[in-house]
Image (cartoon, rainbow, N blue to C red):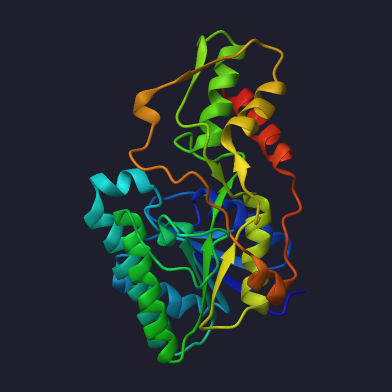
Length: 309
């Protein structure tokens, strides 16, 4: 059995939330979660609750009295945050405040993991990015995360055991197709079935730090077990993957001839050529490192889309 028994996940039906719930169940946790929509997550008790519903959040925290909280609820699309900045900020800032206030109200002191993002760094002066790199948020999503982190520091001073992780890009089967690898994999699967002729891409020359979602959820549990409250940690592979090269690997898993077309609408106005993180602070605290090779992740994403297409 596990020393932390009751886990509470906000945004349990999100891409990472579902993987985290499954992983915690395997580790012997009792898992409860909230999500805006009424959903079923196998083996978990899921309550339909918007993180902005202060009273309901208080009620649930009071009832469950979790030992550990994983705060994942967010509007997580950087792209959509430009068209919906108000709600993006509301969920990250007011939602987080509601959660922290509910914990204080219930008079409990769980370990709280708050998931921030590589986006807070914007375009850094140098790589690899460390936790001390300057914060330069370049989207409403990133600004919301910076504000959320400030809130964490305030409530840490009030005595809450809050740990912040800045997660870099992660992917895997079941991720939404608005993200790069699911988008490519789905298009390849469609080409294989004759539904489309070519794959449309954006800028293939950039290099990014990617991890597998299954490694990420393992990191989140280690974070609540071993990291210091009040501290901030990068969770990343520490490697830079060239998008074009990785696309070639993904294409190599298919026997079909695949034409690649650059589509202007997929190009970003500002695209930092090279972004990757330094994970040594997190490694020192937890011993974590990614175990799933990125080639395997890509293979699994492609298999997922082949079953769907």
